[in-house]
Amino acid sequence: MGEVIRIDERRAARAVEPLWREVVGRRLRERRHSRGDTLADTAARAGIAPQYLSELERGRKDPSSEILAAVVGALGTSMAEISGLAHHDLSRGNATLMAA
Image (cartoon, rainbow, N blue to C red; front, side):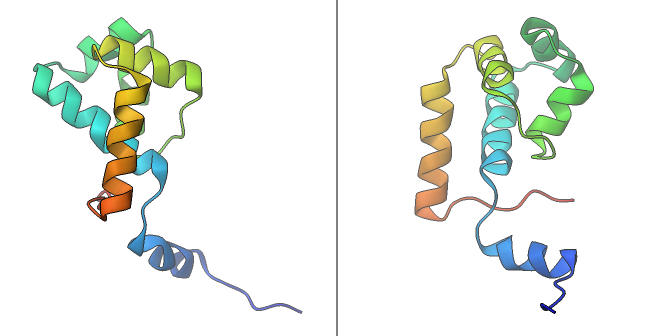
């Protein structure tokens, strides 16, 4: 049989490179804060629950392209801009893991 790898070991292995959803979530939160919006403000404009937006920002949920488009639209930005910023963070090593 194969070797059993515990979930904690997987998490430690990816600590060097965070998931895309974590980096995008951080960028969404930064944009929301720069606008002075609350979770409720942005979520209402995007048509989603504030709790779900919080999970997106923390990198807990992987949004569909439709949800991501709604959120970036509610933040007055574009998918291209948020994706570009996330790509920049990942390629330059500026991305950090979100606190659990």
